Length: 92
Image (tube, one colour):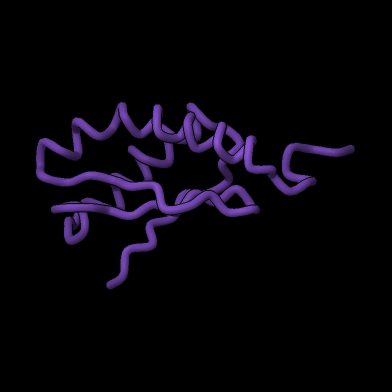
């Protein structure tokens, strides 16, 4: 049975998914910006992994992992169920 993940996404699908991701992240951004942080979408891979980058104070924040699990991942999954995983790609 073919599923949503059985074929490569085309550029229109990717653009649509990324637009929905941005809408979802816009609901989180005010909370991040209060403390001088933000989040940026880097890429959406062929296997539906969303790569993000922490910005500002979020880069070195000890709560980034918790924010990722309970804030970012949950919000993305609720708004864009096609996304399989969300990973931060900030360099150490």
